[in-house]
Amino acid sequence: MSETLAARASASADERPSLARIFKTFLTAGGISFGGGVVAYLREYTVRGEKWLDDDEFLDALEVSQTLPGLNAVNLSVVIGDRLRGVAGAAVAVAGILIPGMLIVMTLGVVWEERRRNPYVTAFLIGVAAAAVGLLTTVTVQLGHRQLTHWLDLTILSATFVAVTVFHISLLWVLLVIGTIAVLIYRPGSHHGEREVKLPHPHFHKRRGLLRD
Image (cartoon, rainbow, N blue to C red; front, side):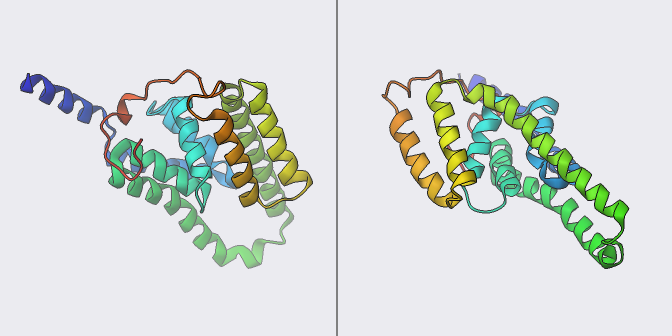
């Protein structure tokens, strides 16, 4: 019996990605995610590429990261890295996502004053910004159809959009109010809270990290 449990524990440990692989994946995503499209690239690499997560698990990580203060890309890296390899995984994921941008900004800062009025540079930056919006829109549509399955979901989405875009209410207050309403609506035991619960990915079992279920 003990040998069987030990074998299962060993197999579970072998399934986890190495710290080097996590670092390389986040380093690549951080190096090519120009213009704010890092969420799209992280989904591409962690869900479609490495298959460490599925869309539901990525969406869960994204939801957690968006409720925390700080940069969304860093928060998301912490959550995913922690779930894959605990504290060490979170550390290498954050390092990977930050290093490319830091080096690029430091390098470009040296020549920016000379080149910023160049029309080709301006056109390039406009194109990158537009592409980033397209990437974020794609991820929103791909993940949204999995999450927005009830008219109440669309109502909450619309209310949030109107509050922030039309009335320019602080995002903090919107999150507090809408979040409280959502908890009341979707609380365990309520009619709308009874949704199918999907079993977690094998990498999520028996993890030890900053964030635990």
